[in-house]
Image 1 (tube, chains in turn orange, red):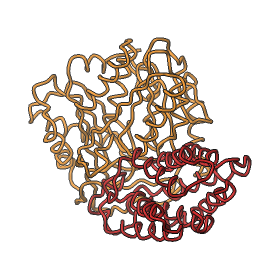
Image 2 (cartoon, one colour; image 1 turned 135 degrees about the vertical axis):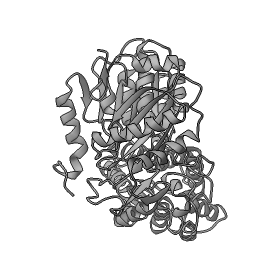
Image 3 (cartoon, one colour; image 1 turned 90 degrees about the vertical axis):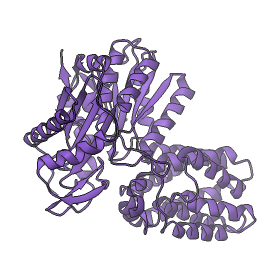
Length: 333
Length: 197
């Protein structure tokens, strides 16, 4: 294992120290491992809290700031944060208008956020609404699974719901916008290599040189199937086809197309992929209204990418274009 | 049942988790995300430290302290599930603890939090048969044996909850890590609480 770390046990605290040093405009609570917007709580504004296992950076702490999240909780690598952290974050951002928890659909995340919401409501009466993100078409959604995983749509939800909250929309409307983005989004990922969790010291799974895993999650969980490595145009087809067959993207105002890097894939390859994705969308008669290309929800040092498409409408596009000022996403300010 | 005996039970559970940490992690690597052993060990080490510093006076206070500590320290899915189980035990424990009654409350708490059913390849598959044995007057040892049998019966099952469910048929052939750690809880009870449960 070659990594830029000191003691593997201290990776998260060391990274949070660096994050605090690089972004003095944000508050970092090292004991609770939460990152909070510098001017929180913003009175009268709905607070947005997210969080999850570490290892997906810049998600979530990189999206804290005006126009996006008010606070983020960092768990152990790939392990949900605990309710104490979520309670501390919720209190820190409660400006009197209620708080939305943005939760990726993993069993641990959902249960810990549920407990935290119960603890906050019992304690202070702050109203908390949870929105669960489950956009991954690689998982069959049925009674017999934990349901679809939350992946790329999380970034879009945090941006768009963040803008809605910043505009001063009330709690139920901010939650509704977040749910709409989730309902209109679908994602599919692919891994060229495994990732290596620092404490484990070796790759999470074996993926031979000539093979790739289609339908991968963001924690090194297995995908739908393992296939021989293929050119980018064929890979794009493997990712876009199941998305388009899962939701009708035609007839609206086009899509937000998001090609995400899994951590170790260079931007030049993501643009090669974006070209193939946009070609397929054109062929399907679906205009690309907006785009996002880059590593925004990663899986440590995994190589690969995911594609997320969100069916757009006027309101969602205006919110997408609204100003945002966070470490990882910044425009219009 | 005395608080002292129940404290010994929790300490024995912590010892067994530490002893089996690597095995639990290996099971979880096969069908989950490979952190069950490390997470449970971190949580129970914290529990032991808390009990060393502040010995608890009543069964209810003891279970509550254990539950809150696990919720704060374990993370993942096991933290809320074990934490909820112990908080429900705290609520069900009167002056004289009836093991069948508190473990039934724990079981109900796990069902409410995790929304799983027996046969989903979860901790319920070991806990549920153990509670059945206790409620029908069986010994604690018999309950531990029933838990172990339930754990082994998860091997051929397809997981329907948690991260293992993403594997579908590929989850067959491995015991469930949660059913395995719950069996340790019952084995610890058999060792420390004897047959007066």
